[in-house]
Image (cartoon, rainbow, N blue to C red; front, side, top):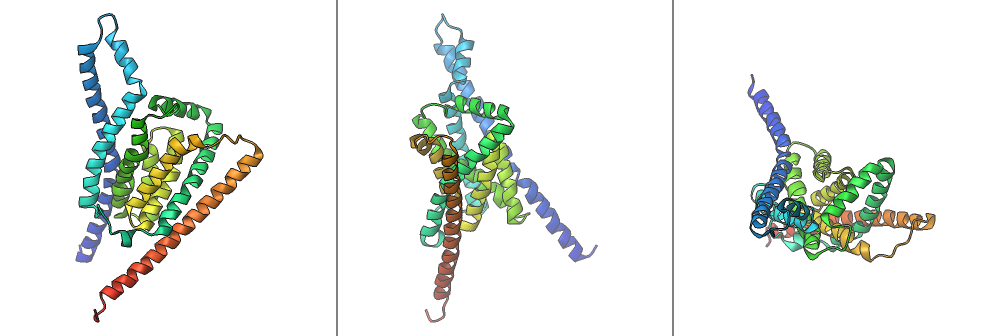
Length: 304
């Protein structure tokens, strides 16, 4: 066996290893979620054994509590804090992430504006996608609505749920999927395949068809802005704004009905939002690269 063949074989096997390692984040995140659930369940059972009144059934009271939306929220908050700690350390210490990137080199006004303008388009596109899927598979919609009810998102949102949905969940999920999963996959695959892979895992992670389908579409866009923007902070920003729209802003908008005219207007807004958002983001990315290249050339000039 020649040295060249052996070196090529080692490179190939490394890529295979990196490919399979990209599945580790979702496995670890699922395990952390399970551990958080078991831990909180143990604390809850212990508290009920001490404080349950004699004239009530502890089993029934415990069952009612575990179906309570606040209970689910506490589990998700605990899980997200653990995951942010674990995957934050993994991403920033092992995969080259930056805690505090240089603002002038990393961010541009056009990119930030592009991300913000993408949000309504992505929300309306997701709504269209959910509508089409629910027509074809109405049982999936019922499962999704039951999930929202359990999570407490079918009624007035509480402050803990707002904290989780708008801040903790976006940061947590970006570190898991765009931070670690996509970076590991990029060592073995071209960007378009790595992005598709992490988006698919992101969709599967939501564990229901309705949410999984639009999460896949959202994951593709989040992976794009993370990669092309050169920073995970862009995908975190987009994810935060997307969830903010879904949990808060959407409740403040008037109900415009489902007439042909309103559907057409929303479709036009969706197309304009996505087109303008992607244009501004790409324009900002290009001008930022040119600006940074000019700064680097000036800094490395022998005359300085």
